[in-house]
Image 1 (cartoon, rainbow, N blue to C red):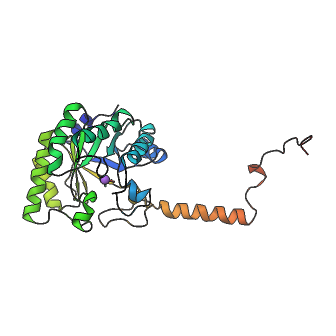
Image 2 (image 1 turned 120 degrees about the horizontal axis):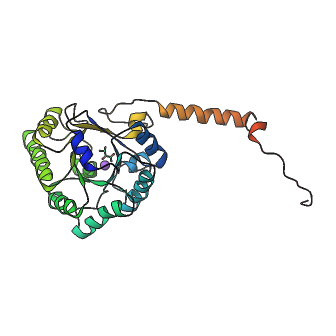
Length: 270
Ligand code: KIV
Ligand code: NA
């Protein structure tokens, strides 16, 4: 069984790899290839549920998709993202929502979009046995506060705030930290200052690991952020397969004899 301790140990070795997954077949591919961590991100809202933001994603949505990913994953650490309003409003509800991902859906850990309001919560979760991956920098659940998705920590005060919150979450017991869309020199400073591994997205090369949204990485998304990289062309592959199917059906080429079953004995039916 993969553990958060393996991830902490890896920090000194080669970079940690993390990708999102939202369904069983994608998780199985990622796991077979040997990715260290599968994140069931609340980016589910954008990638799979057709929403503009992550805000409409619910605990039930995350539970359903976390279960699907966990059932298809043998070796990678499965981390469930906690969606908007599921943590940080009420302590008991926060603990129950996060605990559900481990107790009912077989996640190994949860990820929290962090701020001053998640320091005590991280400590409580860690004490209870819910490992916490913290997430600082650009936290997309704050889209309405930011008015978009701007890079974070670009001035002295906000950089200092991210640095201090990173330390506070490490002290509270977080086992790793995602840094999203921050200047690479800030990510490098935070990484050097922490014992727990940092995992960057749009945070430069000096984090202990990297994460991307799988749809962006394989080339399935119709849009992806500039800090992302497309390593494949799945969208084009699917388009050409769908196109070939339509052509084959319309031309009568499919189904051919080898795709068809023998006729039934229809005596006495008519
Ligand atoms: O939801 C998500 O996919 C994420 C990663 C981009 C870190 O939070
Ligand atoms: Na997320």
